[in-house]
Image (cartoon, rainbow, N blue to C red; front, top):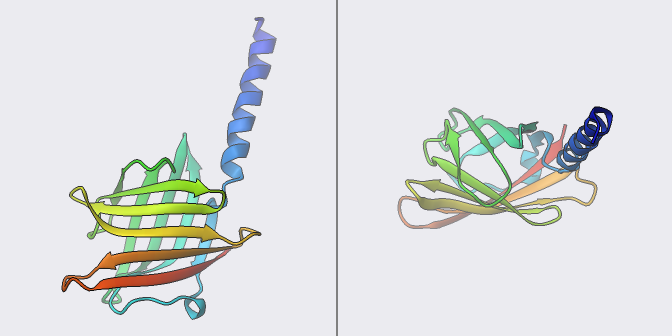
Length: 154
């Protein structure tokens, strides 16, 4: 294969990869709609969530408040393949995994020391302008807590 054909093949391949990431509904900036959300008492609120494409995966930057209302920030870089990737800045978890279940529907698990501490589902509206994150966790007293966070694309 000559150099021109190899260059064209590389350009088309990279374009296809970029298009696949760009089509993912997660990519972009999201703001919490508190009026449409329902949080269990004492749980954290992610006020903004930003997903960007990096290398062969995604970076997620979250800013919000912890269960006591103090500012909180965490970051996660990984793929939507169900594997655990490290989280920085979240005292309740050290890894997160996301897995595409079906178009517009993801499964989420946060773990601390290898043990699941939060599970959830992330679903997008048909136009991908709203995302709903439903999470389940157990508090220190053993009580099951469920929160529903609704976000709008910015």
